[in-house]
Amino acid sequence: MEAFANRIRDYYEDFLDPLAEQFLFRRPPTVGELRRPPQVLLLGNHSSGKSTFVNHLLGEDVQKTGVAPTDDGFTIITYGASATERDGPAVVSNPDLPYEGLRHFGDQLVSHVRLKLRPAELLQTVTLIDSPGMIDEAKAENGRGFDFPGVVRWFAERSDLVMVFFDPDKPGTTGETLQVFRESLAGIDHKMLIILNKVDQFQSLHDFARAYGALCWNLGKVIPRKDLPMIYNTFVPLADKPQSRLPMEDFEKARSDLIAELRRAPTRRMDNQITQIQAYAERLRMHAMVIDKAADRFKSIRARWRGLWLLLFGALGAAAFGMGMVVALPAIALAAVLVFAFIQYILLPRTKRRLIARFDQIFEGLHDRELLLRDRAEDLRMMWEEVSPRAREIAEKSGLQSFAKMSWQDREHLEELTGELIPQLRSKLYDAMRDGRAAAPASGQDRPAPLPASKPRRPQLVEGGRSEAPKRKTFF
Ligand SMILES: Nc1nc2c(ncn2[C@@H]2O[C@H](COP(=O)(O)OP(=O)(O)OP(=O)(O)O)[C@@H](O)[C@H]2O)c(=O)[nH]1
Ligand SMILES: [Mg+2]
Image 1 (spheres, rainbow, N blue to C red):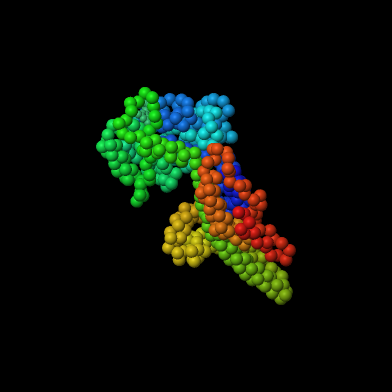
Image 2: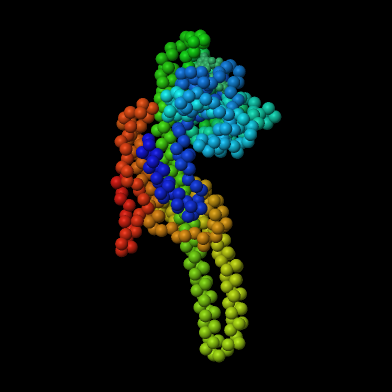
């Protein structure tokens, strides 16, 4: 895991970050964000058993549990050599913790955040986030005082696994749950695990089937997919609860599977980071190539106008001088200044606006071959829709003349990164997972062999002006 993380960081630091700076693209994730521990977010209806599950995982009563809505805030539970707690303001103002971004949600939220440090083995590899239970009525007047779906989205985007709990009393998705699925979890269903918890409460198969059916029906309305995600039907054994009459083996197995998934969060984290860097590099490539092309055209048009200007007034000046009409020189100089100002302040800004308006055509022109492939075309167009507003804004604000030309080595390296190196990194991770090396990081044994120390660098120019081609196939 360490080796994969270092490789990803190197790709950002050595290549993507400088290129993003050159083309004023959004900054890549910081080292702090890349280094944050794997996170698992627990969401669900109130009293669905989130906090009980956390206590079961950690083997101690870290969280309060109860039948009425118990948690009204977010509790971040992470590793610490001794048990301590910190409140929200201390958490969001600590630059060493990756939670400063929560400050934007206001003081109401900050006062509803807590950090608990515990010396549990599981927490060495995974940070758990327990959340306030979702309720049916979350209207503005009796709401929470902070943007609950927004905060859930913030945590969910930064989590490697999102566990959504339901229980037999509320197997439906109503009120706040519905809103959270639509607003906070849209687009991140690959990280989501659905859990029908407390199945030991069912006294007959009939009750179970009804609740399971209701849950599937309700989920179908909020998860826009043809196939529903797998549902883990499980429970936490509690001494004070009556025994169910149903056979429990399968439900116990589902709990072990769930815990195994949770322990795999570090591997998922790496997979998510690979997806993230691939998406970042592809978008940066698109942004930089379109701006670069437009800047190139702008500079050649500017050079043409300026060349014409120089030629015209140079010739006029020389002719006047040659014919002894020295008195005409001030008039020629004045005309030269006026025409120059016209080019500079009227013609060139108009050219810039015209080029920016033609960004879509430039994008199409640059990707003409890829756009012939139907599946790829859809992806590319969606990506361009996402990238183009910022590309236009940047070009508008900083002017096309301010961008240094992208070297062909940078272009090649970017292609190699998105087309070969990052996909190779992913297949290497999958190989490690298949061998079982990356799937059990908690044991600390049998880790993947370290990756070679050599780092892919921007290709260096060697004597004779030829570039030293990046050594392919040497990274793994
Ligand atoms: N029978 C049974 N009861 C459970 C199970 N898990 C939790 N409970 C009980 O359900 C109640 C609610 O559990 P909590 O863990 O507090 O639920 P929560 O989801 O954290 O609730 P909020 O914090 O209010 O959102 C408690 O009385 C638990 O003892 C389970 O698997 N089976
Ligand atoms: Mg709770």
